Image (cartoon, rainbow, N blue to C red; front, side, top):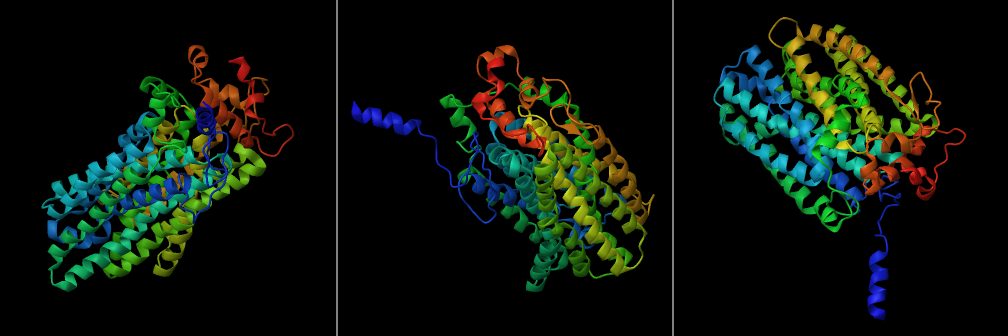
Length: 508
């Protein structure tokens, strides 16, 4: 009997983690070079798998001068393929967000990566403009793993560092868009030097990103955990996590106007980044008459800026939130993205190679930092529909890329330099609606929090649950999140965090 009692006490003890955690067991510190399970392990698995998908999706653009000659592609064919590569993920990102809410980020991301890997392999046998468009379309679905990456980080890291975690994971994953500009020409050159003719070498080269993507999926499945306390399925079986209904998740996501505004603004930071990834190598190759490898290296510098720019945006978001709360996050996002639009306009106006490269790098820093700043706000829009809101925002990025390429870079209506300038104007215009985002408990850019006594974190997040659901205790995770998100008030009188048991949970 004594042994059984000791075992019961031992089982009731909370799990121990290598990083300090909050009441939801989310890490309150972000240690970049740690691989501690489960928090930092999830971080590294998420960014590496997303990186692999980015490499695969944008493996074709740096080799387009060779591919277009082999497949006899016209400018319109190339434009259509570029649009196809980012359009497939529009609805897939929303679906991915819902899948994360219902099944967890580990299973959702690994499944999609494995489902899209065959399209990368099949690129090697493309024989016409149609087959080339199709493989780029289906490969582009893999970009939806961005949503699972952001959901995973928001599930593993607490409010003080969630912007940083989202920024670094997303930024390092996006590095794949720049890295592939270097990797693919090098792989192509190596295969050609071994003895393959150039029209065969580019086909063999696609086996490298395909294999990398496949291996990353198995790593996520084998080593990843959905939440600090374990995987969704095990926690649901144990009764430690409720299984939510799709209709409830969907309703509370699509009826939150903040998610739609963030989707629009994200369309003109991440969407612009996707557009540049598709056009920049060919732009420098044709306009300045550069060698393929040189154009690839210049194009790579845009994507490689993600190593500091997007993480920097997340860190800025967390830093201003410590002083100014959510209002600081919103102001920082608007300022940085607007400046990105200004530099995009300048990029379209300059005519020399040196100036173009310098302005492009500066533009990339602001554009990608805005992406990190966006996902410093997203985790606080909804607790119950976090995945769907992440998917809506991520999908907005792809919609922006599709529209931008359709309007400015399809066919020969505009020169690429004029298209880039007009894209900058679109960035500035589509960033303005951020001014309308307002949280009743924290305020917005121009207005403070609501004066109503009911405008608290608990009221905001518990409004997503019905009275019947509250009676069953289904809202408790939202209650903990509300308590941990009080830091978004900023440094002002009365904003101190209260313990969970002192929060107004007795009202529900």
